[in-house]
Each structure stands twice: as C-alpha cells, then as structure tokens.
Amino acid sequence: MFVRKLDDIIGTERDVNWGNGQSRRLLIEKDGMGFAFLDTIVNAGTDLLIQYKNHLESVYCIEGRGIITDESNGQEYAIEPGVMYVLNEHDLHRLRAFEDLRLMCVFNPPLKGDEKHDVNTDGTSY
Image 1 (spheres, rainbow, N blue to C red):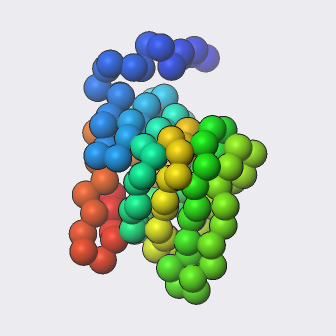
Image 2: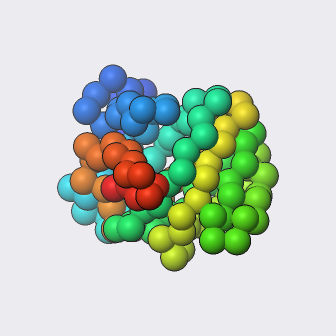
C-alpha cells in the first residue's frame, strides 16, 4: 500500500504543463498498477483536436464546463461535474473548455509520466 497526496505532486516532475493546462500524474507506469491516474486541469478557452492511438482513457469531470465532440459522427456531449466520457476506441475527438475543467483521468496502458500532448495535424497524440 502507498498513499500519495496531490499537494506532494504539485511542482514535481509529475506535475506536467501539457500546453493547455496541468496534468498531475498521481499514478504512472513505474507505480506498477497497470493504469495511470491523473488529476488534469484544462484551461478555459482550450479547443483541441486529439486522439490517443496508444491509450484508452476514461475521464470524469469534477469542475468546470465544456463540450466534447466525437469527430466520427459530429455528436456533441456537454461536460460538467458528474459527467464521465470514455475514449474506448482510440476516438478522434475535439475537447473545448468554456471554463477551467478539472478532470480525473485513467489511462490504459499507463503513461510513463513525462508525456505531453504532441498533436500532429491529424490530431494524434501520445
């Protein structure tokens, strides 16, 4: 067993500025859990086309408001506290934050810990 506090992550190598916010990586690959767990801030005004070709992700919103668009069919979903979305097929999606979003994210396989969104012209990342 181990215990980790968010305050112990902030300001360390696990507190990653990913370009449109902060990704606080509470669990990463070297923690040996088989998944990564992140407390992520997405800055208000962010409009990002993204796709994770190497990871699946589930996201639970605890603060803020935004919208996610499934780029395969144009379906839009409101993001607000209490909403979870799941990228279970390496989905190409657009994330827009109307307010700062605070999202709890699980990645499988886990992130190594130092990744940043390196978005190509087709939206792929990680």
